[in-house]
Image (cartoon, rainbow, N blue to C red):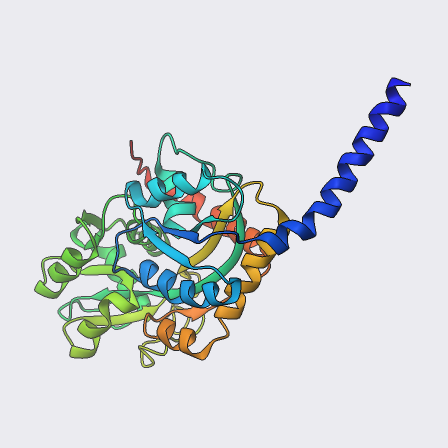
Length: 325
C-alpha cells in the first residue's frame, strides 16, 4: 500500500510539473526583468546588454532593466544572479572573465560557473588584437615570438590587471613563443593603452573596440586579431593564422545566464527573445560598432561552448601561477 501510494504521488508530481511547464512560459515575465552587467557602465559588455535589452523587452512584453553591479573581476554581480530566485526575472550577461578567468584564478570563488547558472544562449564574440609600440621590430606574430624567445623578460606587456584575460593571453603567448615576457598590470585597460602609446611597455593584448583609434592613427601597430576571421573594424589586420601563429585563438565572448534551476520553459522564452534581438539590423549595427559578431545558440550549445573554454584556459591559468584572494 505504501509503495503504491508513493508511486501515485510521484506520478501526480510528474503530471503536475508537465502541465505547469506551459503555464510558466505563458505567465513569464510577470514583472520587469533585471539584466545584471557585472562591470561598470560604459564598457562593451554594458553597451551590449543595453542594445539587446530593448529588443528583448519588446519581444517579452516587459521592460528589461540593465543594472551594473561591478567588483571582483565580475564575480560580485555574477554571485548576485546565482543567488537570485530561479524565475527568469534576474539574469546575467556573463563573459570569459566572470565564467572562466576570475573563478579559476580565485582561491575561493563564490560560485561554480558550470553549476550555478543556466547558460541561456551565446550573445556575441569579438577578437582580441595583438598590439605593439611602433618601435618594436616585429611585423607579425612569428617575428614577435622570436623577439620574446630571444629577449624574454626584457619584453614587457601590459594588461588591465593581474588575472585578467589580457594577463593570461600574455602568459599563453609566452608559452607558445618559448619565452617569458614581463607582465606589467594596470588599473584598467585605459592606462595600459596609454603607456603602450608612450612606449613605456612594448606589447598589449586588448579588444579591438578599445584600441581601434590608436591603430588607425598609427600610434600602435596591430599584428593580428585572435579569431579565424578578420574583423570589419580592422580589415587590414591579419588573423593569428595569417600572422604565423594559428594556435593563438581567443575571443571576448558574452553569454546570457539565468540562475540554476530556472524552469526550461522560461529559459526557452529568454533564449528566443535574445535570438530574435540578434536578428534585428539595428542591434547588429550597434554590435558591429563594438567589433562584436552576433551569435545566438541553443542552451546546450552554450553549455558545450563554456565547457570547451574552461578546458582550454585551465592549463594556461595553472601554468601562470596567478592567484587572487
